[in-house]
Image: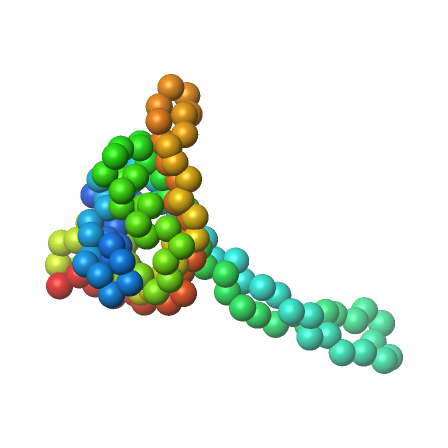
Length: 143
């Protein structure tokens, strides 16, 4: 595992199946941004509290909404790949925020590709964006 030091992200690796049950494809060179988010729902589990002068709400965790947003400079190869996987569910992914050397952290599981947008112009560059919905997430290390 990583020593806890800050990393630059230059060696970031992202591998995604090219179809359901397909071939793991390194798409790192297509991307220049990759942001994961986990939004945990809060449910109000508060009961009445008679006789309590300052009642307190009781929030309990609900469902997690894990997602990933990524994008990069558009290319015909990126267009072909993401057009093919757009809308697919149950794709394997492997994310190496610090590269793929043995012992480096690996985040992996299944995801759905919920949207692909491209090509589009942004500040003189032609870019694309992709949204993932993470359905399973496991932390391990590369071997």
